[in-house]
Image 1: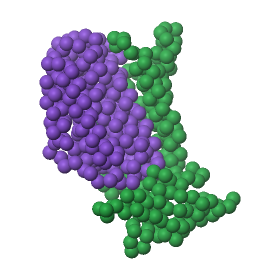
Image 2 (image 1 turned 180 degrees about the vertical axis):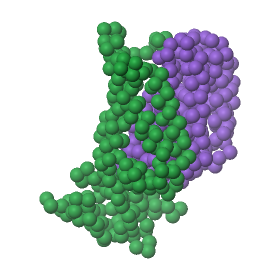
Image 3 (image 1 turned 30 degrees about the horizontal axis):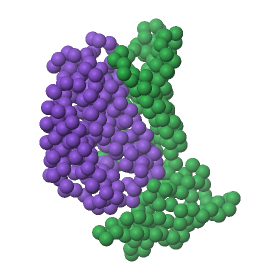
Length: 235
Length: 239
């Protein structure tokens, strides 16, 4: 049992696992095909529905990441136990904050892979669709500003959302989605003719707050390390 | 305006003789970017011409503190190498036509500009780390490896911050902080690679040469992430 624990907490194991994740993500970058549904549905739906020839690299990556998560947790515990009485508090805690950030980002991906939602399609001006909670969303108006080269410079839309608690008027445009109960309604594109039509997508990313928290932990811990290492020779 | 890039490349190369010349090269390149930015009304970060020029500027800008760092202030090989790297990318930008089109609406956000600028600062630092690794392998001078660590750590921080801003931009622009495309995968590989680099250092002095090599290989991964993916694969980030 002690041998297994030492193996799981070893730095070498962490290094090999990170190398393994890099290798299979690299392979995946060549395998993931254009036109694949990997970005159209939550990840675990894609993983269970796509042919193994397209998914095997991701299954292996997920398996390695699971062991890497365990290695990260155990290494952090060991590091804190070994160094608790030594060095400054910030020196002890900064690497563990980075580990925590990494774990939160993985948790975020898991959460989005299970509970994510993606849907959408073309919607003409004046059209309506059913929101995921059953309420009705009308696309009241679309505005497009076309540049001299014929490219859309900007576009936006006005929405009317009939919810059980009343009608909400909203707007959406690139980089400014309409949010309601954890769902975001995105205006991806507008075709000005023959009928002014919007390409609308609805997303739910339950992992987003966790990913943001993890990334911020990570970056703040990085900054702490730089601050602590300033003017010093590297240890 | 391309003459400003040629001038800066020349000054970077002469910077091995005098650091103020290197500084003058950076000023020339910043003026080039400033003029492009003023003409476009935004940061020039679209297309190979502008991104290569921005990469060159980032290498010079990030290299400056290392040229004046304790222990290497009079090292002409270091200043020549950093100057040559910055000059190389300034010259590589020249054959490409500058893209003067307005920004597509989805790119018209500060999150995008922050994301790209921070990524290039990181790339520049990874390039400087590779040079320091090469010099360490040639001379076995520990100061160079210490400086490589600092370049990698600061670069890693910029890169992490770039991923944060990219994730926020993606969430507001595409509906997700993550897309499974070759660019995102290679961005993760690069981030993991420098995580690996930082952990390799924990193996102690026996791994010093391995660490130096990792800093060199890391810049190879950086170049593939920036140029290789854009040229060889279809992705969300084609420049």
